[in-house]
Length: 402
Image (tube, rainbow, N blue to C red; front, side, top):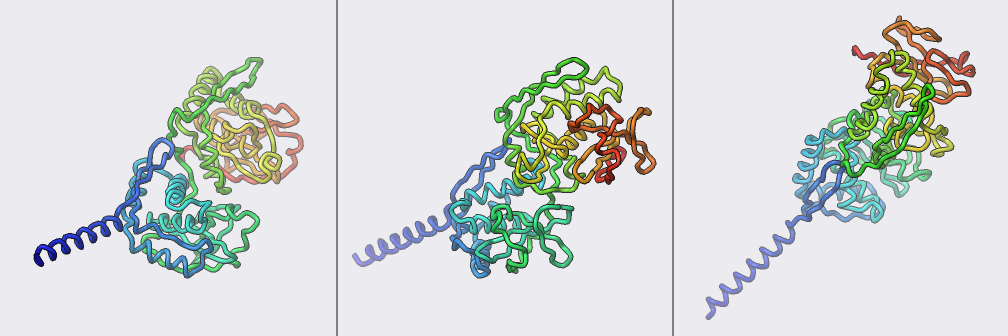
């Protein structure tokens, strides 16, 4: 009788241990709709870490020590595999990490904890990301060597770290000296982060809508049904002011490209090169309504070519980038971007001599092409009267041979 009782007790203990082990190691499954794909991942219970609402160096260290000892490898492996499968640029990949962190720790529930997950995942996926705390805030930086003009940064050993989340604090964000860096060495976090977007995601076709666009050229009206996707706005919502080369070379998504570029190519195929560029210049100038950024957004904001096609209003920066993209895709001609004190314009190097005003840059002749509405109806080779005596600088030189 005693032996049977002992066996029963042993079985009971083993069963309880099995249940405890199972509960401790079970993972929750998540799914993220991410543009043209779905990111599925499991998060082991060992990486679900609760933290206080206000981060300190101590709470950051505690979070890291706990999650770093947990079973996070499956999640980071899934993230990196998804990045490789869809060939995501760093900025697009960061949007996936943001969505992942949001599922693990909702931003509105505990912003500090949400930021800690982004920081941890970005590091474990190979990027050198840093944290600083102060004033009840947690500030998130990433190593970046590019020319970014409008977001805070700090320097460490001659390396620049750009702030990824200052916009979340708005006017509450302080100067960098107000925040104390949290010094945690993460072996995997070694790579620089890039803001260059050289490939847009392939959004699901059903997520596009049609936008009617009309413009007149040589007494003929042209109609376009552009396919546009509001998800593009979300991608660039907090995108910083990158250098002009990076900005001008942001491409269109596949569906938007297919709804515009082949039609433009067909419309200009019977025109000589000068008239074809003139057509593209006037399309960029007159097919969309103009409004400066202060009135439109309350601040300076550059739109990618696809955003310019999507939004109701755009300004000179946006027109210059769109014009550049169209000329590059259809003619692939050398171009320069001209930055005036309050204006951005373009000049094009044609294959054959073209009459009109021009500039000489590096021994080559570039003819002025104004893609933004002016008081005068400018032709190829004409400059607005108000700009003729205004100094400018070349901020981008596109040479197809390079």
